[in-house]
Amino acid sequence: MTFDELTLEILKTLIPKSGVREWEEFDVRSSLTIAAMEMAAIILEGGSILMPSDLYIDHGTTIIFGSEVGDDVAWSTESIANGAGRQATFYDLGADGTARPGTYRFRFHTQAQATPTVKAVCQLYSKTSDGTHPDNDDGGTDAAVSSVDKLANLDLIELAKADEAAANIEYVAKGVVDLPHRYFAPVLWNAMGSATTADAAETKLHLTPLYNQSQ
Image (cartoon, rainbow, N blue to C red):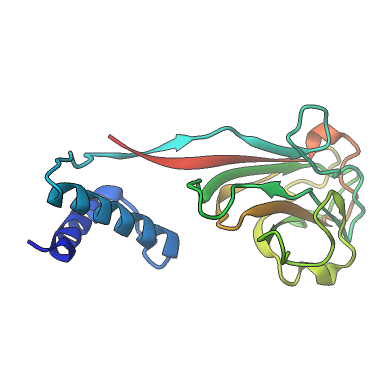
């Protein structure tokens, strides 16, 4: 059996075991193909491998974006006016050419100082850079968004929706996000109808790397 034939047979085995269905995503296809090629090379060189029976998610250390002492990355989100925004300092997720996770679990929470409009939102965006070409020219440090137009080339991650017309109620946005670029900064845009809370503890982003672990 040739290398290509063996790689294909292994890939056919990996796909149903992975439980992954996002085949249109390059990272998913690439990861499975590389794994199949590595296994084929080991076998053809006379080694042996055990095919994984299950694929689990392992969690890395959570990165906290906020403005309290002890937070990992600076993000001053207190008292952001309605119709204004704030970006965090860029966080280095790892140099190109080094192995690192590309998928992260996120949980963002915030509150409004005064009564927000029910179903109004606080928008969470992803700003990235390769170290030379950022998504906009607002810089790479904790700073105000200079204009709503500066959101045009950012990726919307999720919306935290106001579910009650009352001050100091926590609104949450959560999910999983792919971050393949080296540098990442969350960007908040406030459209709740009220300024964000003045309490630094109440507006943060928790970002946790996810790893695939086979057993």
